[in-house]
Length: 300
Ligand SMILES: C[S@@+](CC[C@H](N)C(=O)[O-])C[C@H]1O[C@@H](n2cnc3c(N)ncnc32)[C@H](O)[C@@H]1O
Image (cartoon, rainbow, N blue to C red; front, side, top):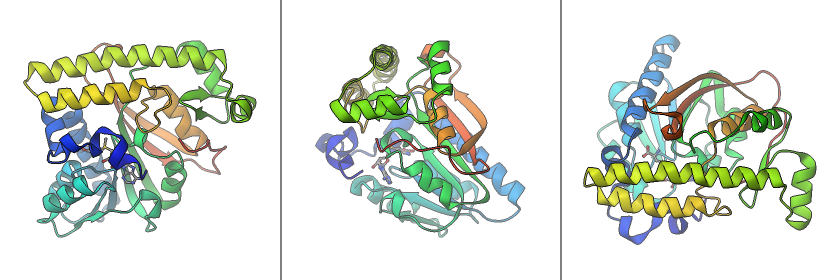
């Protein structure tokens, strides 16, 4: 996503000298707990494989998680993949002491070698939709996609879920969720958006607002002003429906997105022992499903 440097909080001038990855582990809920869980999942995979693994950390930021994996599993090849120059530089410094670790600074879509583990931690909602199809082609037999993200806490109702289950394609149009081919065609033809999509987007924003208030209060209570200020900017970015680089969706929607892209969900872990409206971090394990993907949605 070439606009990442200029358009999201990670590329802004005031954060240029900040190791955002390190700071977030301190002042933001759930990220460190997620790190530990992901490292444990990769270690378990290493043990069951009985051989060193090739592991990529897509959108690694400054490489905090990549380093934790390299420390725990020194015989595994760990690739920190980051396109933004500043965090990529920080990742290179951080990983310098680990001989089996490296930094890949091109777009994930340009990575061509087979992999045992693809990790996307906090990156899914920043990546173009097409990265799922690419990930599928790279996974070795038995390879796993570990997808962890800060989602929007769940905002789908049972009726929404029924509608999603009937959809063999989903796509974002101007930030609105479209879950049928005729809806997608109508949006492309004249920009029209179904009422259901508008209602869903309104619920997404209200649910997110509640979550971001919690995150910002959490940071301020701990005197973590850089995190609080970054999160205020991220909140604004996420509230703008059409701003595609920061658009957190509900876990159920992302699960469906993975299914239509040919992935089988084998585990879902939630971070944070709190009521559902304050649970935003989920970590999934996905395997490529047998057979071809049903369909893919367009880029987002
Ligand atoms: C929220 S950050 C991820 C944080 C990081 N995983 C961590 O553990 O601290 C998302 C990152 O994805 C990177 N990114 C976005 N598009 C990418 C792409 N196509 N290939 C590789 N990295 C990408 C961004 O530059 C950004 O640093």
